[in-house]
Image (cartoon, rainbow, N blue to C red; front, side, top):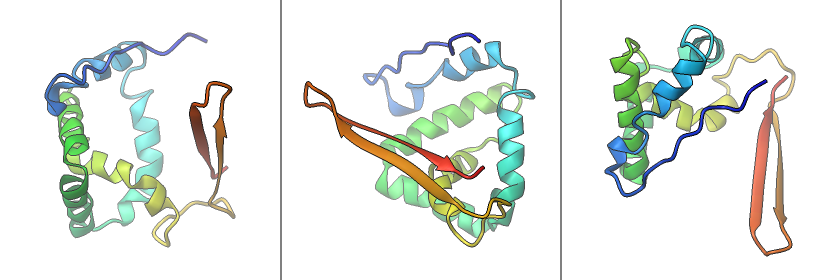
Length: 139
C-alpha cells in the first residue's frame, strides 16, 4: 500500500486552473480503466443512468447559481479529463457527483443494499478545532 499522490491546490489561481495537474498525478499511479472507470461504471448503473438530460442540466445550473467558484473548478477538472481522452467526464457529469449524496438517498437510486444510511461524527479537538467526518454505509 502506498500513499496517494500529493497535490497542492493553489487558491490564488483562477478557479478553473486550481486543480490543473491533480488528475495527471492520480492517473500516473492508477490508470483510468482501473481507477476512475470502475467507480463511474458502478454509479452510472445504480444511479446516474436514471437521470434525464434535463436533470443533469439542473444539477449543473444549480452549481453555477449557488456555487460558481466550485463550478469553475469542476470545469477545469472536466477539461483535464477531456485532454486525456475522457470527454464523457464532463462538467455536468462531475456536477452530478456533487449532488451524489442527495441523489443516492432518493427513489432514483438502484442500490441493492437494504439501507442507504450514513454515519457521521462531529467533534472538537483539544485546541478547539471542529472536525467532521462521514461515510455512506451502502454496503
